[in-house]
Image (cartoon, rainbow, N blue to C red; front, side, top):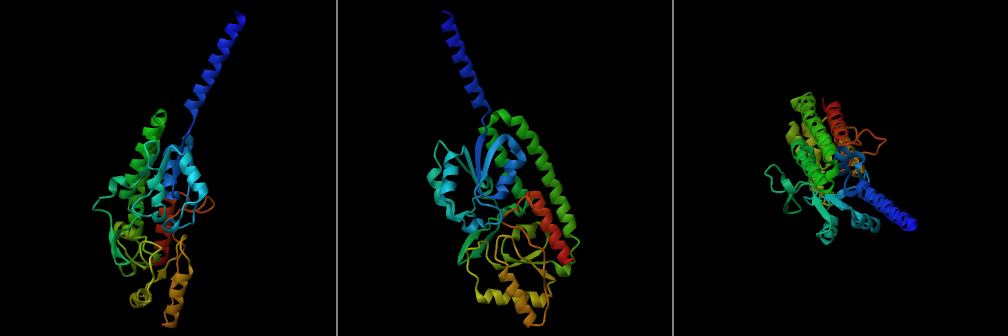
Length: 305
C-alpha cells in the first residue's frame, strides 16, 4: 500500500513540475529587423525568447532567408515582419508559413492603407515607401500592434507588457517633440538632406527638410547616370553643406559624388554616418530605435546648421 501511495505522489510531483515548466516557458518570437526587435525588447524585455533574422548593418531590401532562418521561423510562436515590401525577397517564405498554427504578422498591417504612407515612382512603377518608422506617429502604430500580439500570445504577462508599453509610448512622444525642436536649428537655406538611398522622406516630412537621394526607396533599384548628374548639380547649385553615408549602403557612391563636386570646384563634407534600415550593434550609439533617431537628428543638425 505504501508503495502505491509513494508512486502516486511521485506522479503528482512530476505532473506539477511539468505544469510549472509549461507555465514558465517563454514564447518564442522571431523579428526580421533590428527595428522590430527593439519594439519587442522595449515592451517584453526578458519575458520572451527573441531571435532577429537580419543582423545589424545588413540591408533588409535584398536579404534572402537562409536555412538557419527557416529553422528559427518554424520553431517560433510568433513571427513579426515589416511588410510594405521592405523584406521583398522573403515574402514567399512568409506566405508558406502563414498557417493557423503560426502567427505571422506584418507590424504595418494597421497602416497599410493609410493616406499617411508615402508613394513614389520607382523603376516605372508606383510603390509605397517602406521607411515609415521615421514618422514617429506611424511607428507608434507598429508599437501598438506588437503590444497587442504579445498580450494575445502571452496573457500571463499582460500587466508587465502594459506598463512597458505605456512607458515606451510616452518616450516616443517626447522623442518627436525633442527632434522637431532640434531640427529647427538648421537655417532655411541649408535644409537639404542628401543620402545614398531614398529612406528619409518620412523623416523629411516630419521635420521640415528636403531630401535628395542617389537611389530609390529600395537599394535594389537602378542608379542612372542621369540621376547622379542631376544630384551633383543640385548640390552644387544649392551649395549644400554636407552629404551623408548610411550604415547599410556602400559609402563609395556618396564618396564618388563628393569627388565629382571637387572637379566642379566645390568642396562638400561627408557628415556622420546615418542609420536608416538598421540599428547599430550594442557597441554603437544607435542600438535602440530612440537612440538611432536621436543620433540621426544630431548628425544632421551638426553638419547642416
